[in-house]
Image 1 (tube, helix red, strand yellow):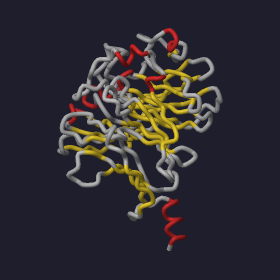
Image 2 (cartoon, rainbow, N blue to C red; image 1 turned 30 degrees about the vertical axis):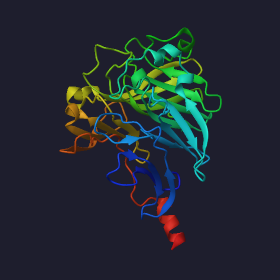
Image 3 (cartoon, rainbow, N blue to C red; image 1 turned 135 degrees about the horizontal axis):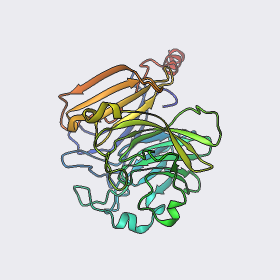
Length: 334
């Protein structure tokens, strides 16, 4: 978090079936906040996995409040709602229901994919806040879609997705790829905002992990052949985009990952850390750090294997264990 603390989900008891606690602690275990989460809207993503309400991501807003990806608890849909929670009181200040942004038929007629009969029509797996224009960028795996939304009005600003299957109204927000071979993301994860590399106020640079397995729309021919970290540059005035950089196709099917995974820009080095979290059908999670240039070179690689069933590496990040904020505050408290 911005103050150097950590957020993590936990349970009241190790034997419990639901992750119903959200804790904020520092690196020596001091507790700053503990949120008790209602289990009424908790859902399981698959058989034999614990239930949770906060299912994929939490974004820290400039106010310090927390924007969480949650389930609506209505017994019909899942993973298509966000709530802003007051950091100090735990009160819900804002609710964003993604069903309000889409035509009814998109979610009402969506194929039931959940083990428990719920319609996981959007499957939101990331959210990041853009302070430059008070907006959020979200990723929806089951719509093969990355979207930018005005945070105050909840209106769509743009949609980065393959152009097939959109309503006339939503098609007005679609980003058009600049070249014929432009690759739209499919079942992507972890859409984040990069630094402004081109110093152009009209564009925004976005990094994501393109799983490259089509759920609703996309390029069926290349699907499943590889997965890749991809850097898109979106012109928000012309609604056009180009691919600035991508890495993963050259690794082929050995690093294809159908689910989970991430790509993160490392400010200190300028490199990209990629988590191929479900390689070899979930037998391996591979962490690859590469240079962010035309001739990308691998500078670091590690693998995780022989883990408990389902315990793949969802994301990979590089942290300083003793960061400057932690050291400064510890000195003051001491």
